[in-house]
Length: 187
Picture 1 (tube, rainbow, N blue to C red):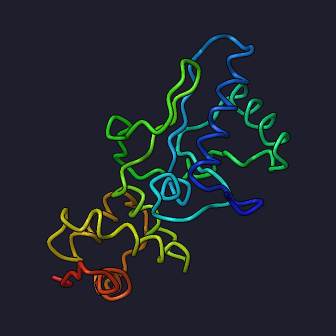
Picture 2 (picture 1 turned 30 degrees about the horizontal axis):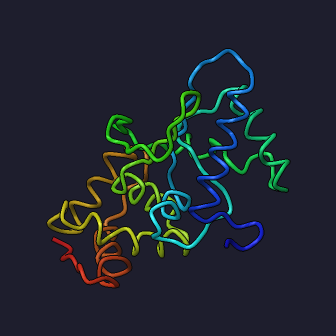
Picture 3 (picture 1 turned 90 degrees about the vertical axis):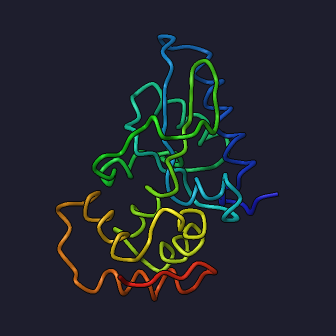
């Protein structure tokens, strides 16, 4: 059972099913899509106990937002418990075809972004909670990198506008990788 106000895997999936049911009860019949990132994706994968909201990098249209609000009201959640605030931080080169299906209904499909992309997105912000999440994600993506310089290069490919930080590879190696069973050299 989840803590009140927090969304664990079961609660997230139940809420998504309710959104689908609301959509099924009206509207124009279109199928809506959300692409989940962040803590909610980790919660669905049981890599984190719970989260406070569900973030999507796919913009949510008016009909979907209305269904989200209806479900949120039923459960005492805010109107933005499922939101598209993360859309502004979608990495360059993000490919939705690489996402996995987390929930599917004829009116609503929810995809999960690849963990590699979620790691890179969290590296962009890198607050303490993001660092903890990156430590959790790292063992699942470590096989894709030979050194922390490659991780930093992937970050700059995803966010070419980010300021250059010559210490980023060293920080990745020490603050994230070394805290796991998958340490990574800087070079």
